[in-house]
Image 1 (cartoon, helix red, strand yellow):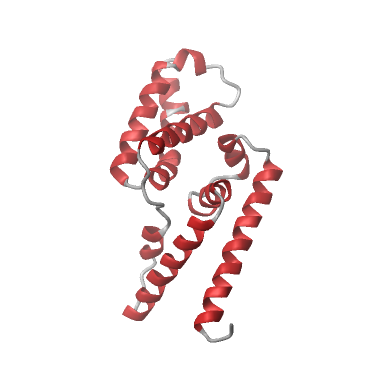
Image 2 (image 1 turned 30 degrees about the horizontal axis):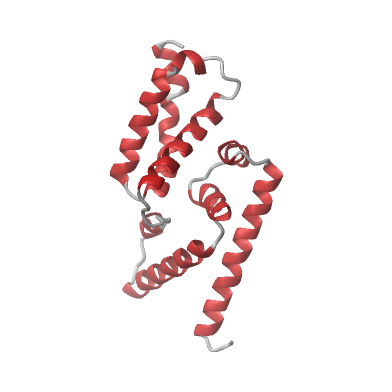
Length: 171
């Protein structure tokens, strides 16, 4: 694989890997460092990966594994879509407060989910990955990914209903 092919096939995927790295590592600086390190490692192995049958999946899997290795070294807090939710501009302070409160509640619920369910839900609903990409990264078949996502969403929905019915006195 030459430089031009590497830029086109591998380096172009860094923008799609970035949200996953931010979420997994906990902050922007660590994610940028991770993307650089991942790309350096892939560049060093460009001759071996040049003919890989699923290069996109290999790059995603490499990025995920690198992030998992970094997490083993240190355990950051779970980063959710708080920044994405805050981009939705609220018109009143009350709406902003409610959005922040909802984000905190959802973060607590996500922390309670089994790790696989949490990871799949975040990859699909926050990072926007397709099922086949999630399947490659997690090394699970697509049907299993769909089942885990469904279970995670159901658990979040149940917990949110409990929380809001309790707050409204309908418990």
